[in-house]
Image (cartoon, rainbow, N blue to C red; front, side):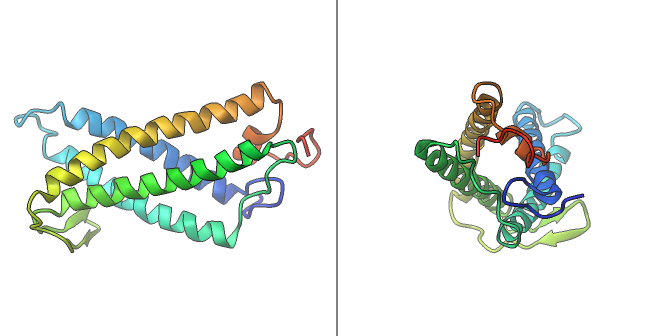
Length: 190
């Protein structure tokens, strides 16, 4: 089992964190869309937002680990076959995905703590409210949260389509590397 990244492939820790975050983001997006359809008398009206907040804080913690892990275990080098545009757009897209995701998490925190109450994470621990009572904090953060959620979904879909393009059209090892497969002996375009 390869834990750390190499020059040619992602290690299992990076792969696990990548796909865990991807699944969590889409799950949270679906949960958020479902939550806004609930009426006051629905049994999940109060429970669903608590689950959403708890998972959001856990995603934030995993994202901090992910950034630290990128310094400990840098990603593989780009394939030699990548054009300058591909290299630049890949870096820009990854950077944007990180910024938007942290923006979603930050705005979610501001929504959740606008009334000054801490966020209980499944009853395990609490995250205190540091900014609250800032006028229309919850409304403003809510609008930002909504738009950033749509942006992350669109960007991540484009990210996935680019990986599929590399696999099926360019016939390179980009997608295999994203799944942590050994590509050292295959036609990687290098």
